[in-house]
Amino acid sequence: MTDDWKRRTKLIHAGTKRSGWGEMAEAIFLTQGFAYDSAEQAEARFIQAGEDEFIYARYGNPTVRMFEDRISAAEGTEAAFATASGMAAVSGALTSMLRAGDHVVSSRALFGSCLYILEEVLGRFGVEVSFVDGTDLDQWRAAMRPDTKAVFLESVSNPALEVIDIRSVAEIAHAVGATVVVDNVFATPVFSRAVEQGADVIVYSATKHIDGQGRALGGVICGTEDFIRKTAEPYMKHTGGSMSPFNAWIMLNGMQTLDLRCRAMADSALEVAQALEGHVALSRVRYPGLASHPQHDLAMAQMGSGGTVVTFDIADGKEAAFRFMNALKIVTISNNLGDARSIATHPATTTHHRLPAAQKAELGITPGLIRLSVGLEDTGDLIADLQQALARV
Ligand SMILES: *Cc1c(COP(=O)(O)O)cnc(C)c1O
Image (cartoon, rainbow, N blue to C red; front, side, top):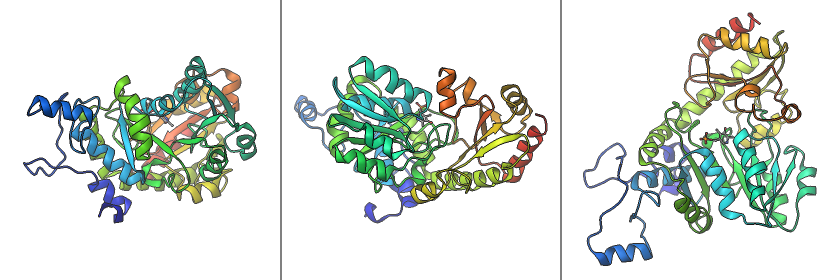
């Protein structure tokens, strides 16, 4: 039944489990543990827990399971494991499958914390990581080795908005038997077609669009039943990065409006990008939905949308960028994205401040770069706010 549903239907109904009370909204099972009818039942459950049998909330919980079943149904994967944050999902997906001596190929354009995992953490445990320009397929091909166990990429990079060709990278990776791990936050579960494009493991920070109102941290690892049950879950449940039932409940509610929100935000983002493109104060406007974006055709083929984030470069640099941000009246200065409230971020001094200048330059993180997460406000109001602030630089 569920398999025939379209994604919009799955985002609302998939995974719903009702207790004997028949509650309409998903129940929050705010419990750390579960009582057994007998010692024999406890023993049996530790040997092999059944589908709707739980042991301990770090291993699984009914509210969390609803979230996992709903997101994996929407994403088109066999299974999912919910995590405490997006970074718990990224680090868990990678460290659960890798061991000393393995090789990983990763796109260079990554969110700061993802870069930390790949650059700092994995190396400490004897995993070698080669970085490539994710948009250059020849570099992916050249970096691949017989001992390459995984490739990692942000399908749309944060904040450079480079779009990476999942299908082609997956073909290159699968030729040497490597697992393709895609951080799909910017694509959102609404525009994602990562499974059909060849991704093996898809991770989300649920903190972003899935919550959508900036309330809670969460993440999820989506993959095959085999990968989730035998690799990701044992690692996550023993290392402690599981999602809390309360946050799962927030994410379940977020998913019911996810499709509408992401489409409305992406429509607005396109209008904002079009309105800003060519503005005298800006040296560049970048949005995958604009024909001027270097991977515009790929973005349309891969996601059918440019997504919900627009970036632009204030030509006069950091002081002008700060004047612009400080003059905003509707758009809020913060560092989340995918929120109903539009958010402006200055990556060079916040999310990516840790990077050395040369690396910032390489990733297109200029002193004037602004990352704008377009929210659900009236598009005309947003454009007017951005324009009045640009007039102040
Ligand atoms: C925010 C983000 C993360 C991390 O998610 P948290 O929920 O903050 O841990 C990972 N990858 C990308 C691309 C992100 O934007």
